[in-house]
Length: 285
Image (tube, rainbow, N blue to C red; front, side):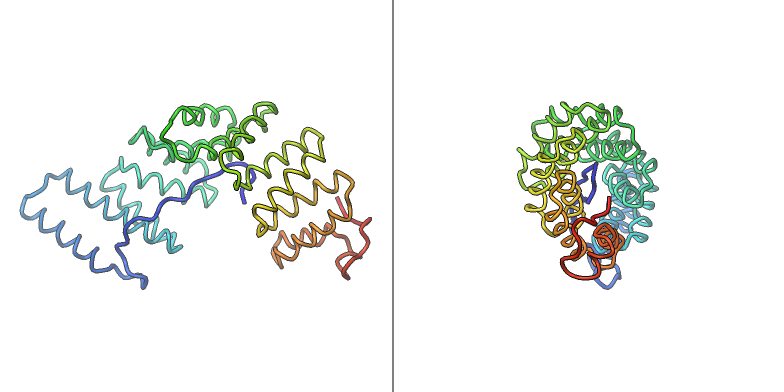
């Protein structure tokens, strides 16, 4: 889970390729039709490039949702070669680069998507989230705030969460609290918002409130090991070592042999990791 920024995954598009990785009949038909129109002079050069770009983008979307990132990048590159201002291609390219932690390049693509389509609300939210990852807090706020004035934007809780995190990092705790509470009001199932409220409470030196918010986060999303670790930290700050021990064990159970799982077992201490129960007083910071 992300601690700070929250993104929306790109939507699926109509498939144009088979699961085997071969271009399906629909894509072949599209290519043949495109070639025929070009030869017949039925389209202008700009229209031909637009259709080529759309086809490559649809192929990229199919590859993306099958986890074939290299092929996604190949098709997006070809889409943008055909039509450099293809907003959807820039948006998906930015999403891929964000996942690779190439945040500067991701921000460039989200900006280009927004320039090509000023009403591209998801691209604006993604740009703001990327600026948060770059720790450009005030720039992120400037980019994100206009979304709150868009009545047709369908996921405002994500914007409130991202704004809340940016204000938290700037030390504007009252603003952070306002936005994060609005995020969970708009979407009570939004466990990331509950967790961020817990982190805000810890910064305010209010461990009891932190435990309340972290407990709500784990109740809403019990499958995420990281939430149990952060709940354990809040419980430990509140002096509830037995409960913190149980939360760390839940984290270790869910995370298995991953780095996070090892971290949770280390926090339990040598005696606690050796046998069930252990020495609760040996919880490590």
